[in-house]
Length: 144
Figure 1 (cartoon, rainbow, N blue to C red):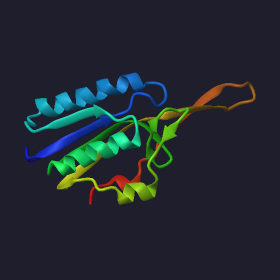
Figure 2: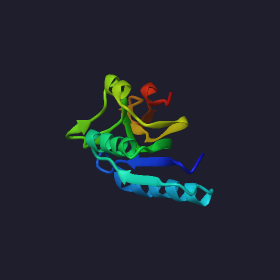
Figure 3: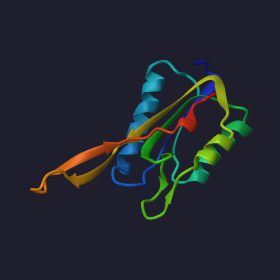
């Protein structure tokens, strides 16, 4: 990836359990990019709301920067990444994702490192709980 392009890594910390581990994952990912020879700018920051995400993309666009790699570290809901808290959740609708102006570079990539929600449901009459794992990756977040 050309050094003129930037890497953007955003993560959440407030939505659901385990959020305190996402900054560690994000910073490890940023360090690996540097160790593997990327010498350009890496933006690695928390995005706890939809407006935080829009701000990151807006600032990159205003500065004339192109995103070569985008990474999200957090939880996923029906339409993709979750922001906010469980009590006051936020999520972009498919329409919002389609309308968003993300300054992707020509050969950009977008990766979603998602925590899998575990829902417990009785599997047998004896009440044994079996974890069910679900994960949805939004189709609207693919660079064009």
